[in-house]
Structure formats: C-alpha cells, structure tokens
Image (cartoon, rainbow, N blue to C red; front, side, top):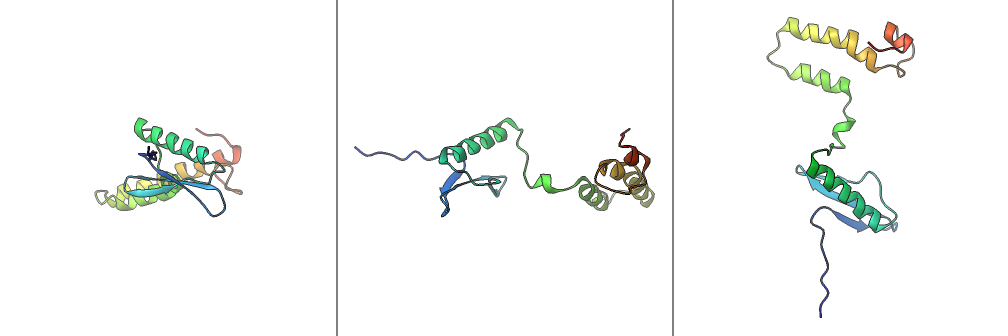
Length: 123
C-alpha cells in the first residue's frame, strides 16, 4: 500500500536551514511571504489557513499596500489626475497641506505650529 502525500491547495511551507518554517502564497499575481518565520510547521500552516480565509472572505489586505503613507498616496493621486484644472489642483494641495497632513502628524511632528497638533485635538 502506498501512502500519498497530501498537498496544500493554497500556499506552501518550507523548512529553512535555520530549522524554522517559512510560509509563502501567491495572490494577485505576486508571491507573498509571511512577515516572519515560524518555529513549528503547524504554526506556518495555520497562518496560511488564516490568510486563505481572509482572501475568501474579502478581508485580506495587501501587506505592501500598508507601507504607503496617506501623504504619499494623496500626492501621487493629485499628480495623476489629468482631469483637474490648475486651480482645483492648487485647492486640493492647500487643503491637504493645511488640514489633512497636520492632523495626521499628531504626536509625530515636534514643533508643529498647527493649533490642532499643538493641543492634540482633532476636529
């Protein structure tokens, strides 16, 4: 009687030279690695199962997307909007610089002169 090896249908795990386990999976045409390695194979498999569940339920968030700051995103978004008139573009930039960016910088921008940043309150 032969024993068959059951293969995962989502992702894979492999044992590293260090003895730890690395989990990887393909999604949206890109290979994604677990943020860290695992001490046990079962932990790596459980992590893959959780990721698969998130993808199927629609709650998966691309780990790379989370590395883009709001400021970088909005600056790129305004720059890519070819349909904006120069006055609209300037207005958006004024609103972002005067209202959005200072509020998001609470606690991270020492010496900020924006009143909401100084008091720590938000609108």
